[in-house]
Image 1 (cartoon, one colour):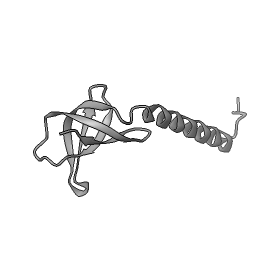
Image 2 (spheres, one colour; image 1 turned 90 degrees about the vertical axis):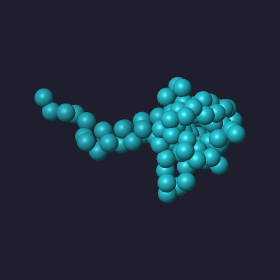
Image 3 (cartoon, helix red, strand yellow; image 1 turned 90 degrees about the horizontal axis):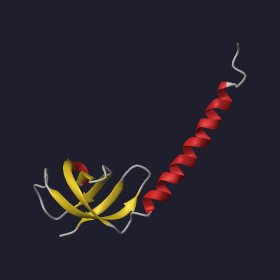
Length: 93
């Protein structure tokens, strides 16, 4: 049995669905902006002079801090911006 739906239509439908999903994720994540979360620091972005870690709810957050040698520590991070898959924040010192 031949597929009645052309590939172009499948691709269009998928693009519409992905765009809608991205908008939903951003809207949901924006509700977290302004909150402070405990974050386990597990990485460093040398080129951007930023740290990376995960919240206790396993959300990725990239943040700046005036301190050094933060790997492996739990820190309080205030969320300043949200994207569809991650957050940006500041170390609450």
